[in-house]
Amino acid sequence: MSDKIKLAVLGSGKGSNLVSLAKACANGSLPAEIVLVASDVADAGILERAAEYGLPAKFIDPGKFRTKLDEAAETAYVTALNESGAEWVALAGFMRILKGDFLRAFEKKVVNIHPSLLPAFPGLEAWKQAHDYGVKATGCTVHMVDHGIDTGTILAQGVVPVLDEDTPTTLHHRIQQEEHTLYPRTLARLFNGEIRI
Image 1 (cartoon, rainbow, N blue to C red):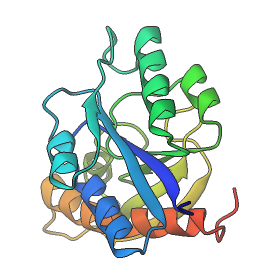
Image 2: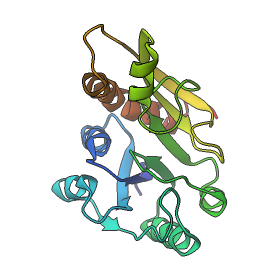
Image 3: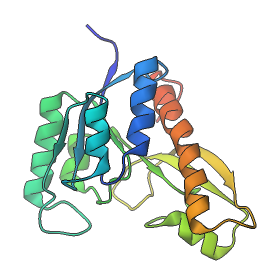
């Protein structure tokens, strides 16, 4: 019997955070096993990354809405997660808001990483918001997912200085580098019981 946490990862994009989580699982620094990678985008890079790491991956149709899952899709996601045996869900660039039934199915078991120091710059393109606003430091936040947008309990933050020569693109790149360290480390602390919710 494995004492590893069974983790599902949901994402919509290239999957760079998935890679950092998969590597951490493989080298033992994250005491988890990724049992499912699911995406709302049929040709998302995250599904290709999952295949490269030999992880079970599937596209699950998000339904008719642009920013959230419709009811049938929500049921399909919860069913797929339950069938995979997932105990925790890590969002890695999943671009849809998760609602009541999903969050009830995985109560206090859904974690997200957001590319800003919350509560500053919630929502989309947070690195661009930070750059446009002219802050001297931004970063990333690992937080629990609740019914608000980027409002759940903060578990950890990583600070990234904003350089004078930064563009939104270069800033985003450096935030992502910080994410790739912070996310697996924070999940490990959470699963080891070092972080109490």
